[in-house]
Image (cartoon, rainbow, N blue to C red; front, side, top):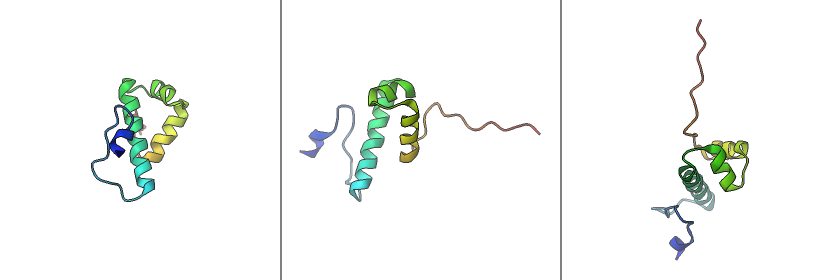
Length: 79
């Protein structure tokens, strides 16, 4: 069964995605979320677990449309 192929801690998709690319993106997003959850939302630790650099994880998250939990809103300058 396809559900048996999902890595531990990553839930199978509820509905089939529209394309293989969408399936890969959904899998990657779930995999990154799971790594972040296991690392206590620490990007450096999650990146190490995934075999990426911290910058590589950040770029992957940007491509997937994910926002790091520790991301801060841009500061506004007083005028």
